[in-house]
Image (cartoon, rainbow, N blue to C red; front, side, top):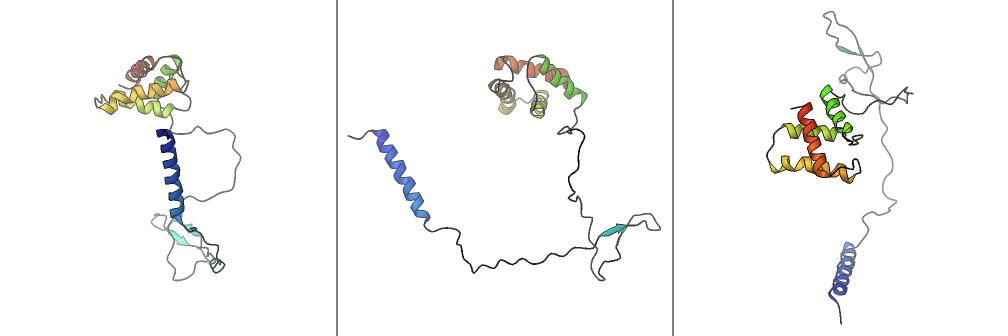
Length: 173
């Protein structure tokens, strides 16, 4: 006599096997007839900036620029070699006094905010938005639940929700 669980397992295995066999042939062929040469790269001439007589700082091509070639636009950021740094830079945007106050209140209430500062500041914006939608009502308790489940506080979800809302209103609203 077959049990429903055993029949379900057998059906799942059969479907998986049929799916794999339906794929058929390999998608990559190791064929020696594929050309492997790469076209050579050409370097564009470097531009130099000179002040025109009217001071607009127009770009002019260097001495080695090919005649008749259009001038290249500003190339933007360029790769550079590694450089030694004295200290690790702070990631993200600088904090406003309101951000510092908000995060300080959370920390004072026993909530570890390290690494989730931006998410908490975004949550505070929702609190001050007076968003009465389901999304607005669900966001703060969801964030509070994440803080509790991540072990960032030993308080209840309801307590953390109230702390976030109060700190947001004190700092931003």
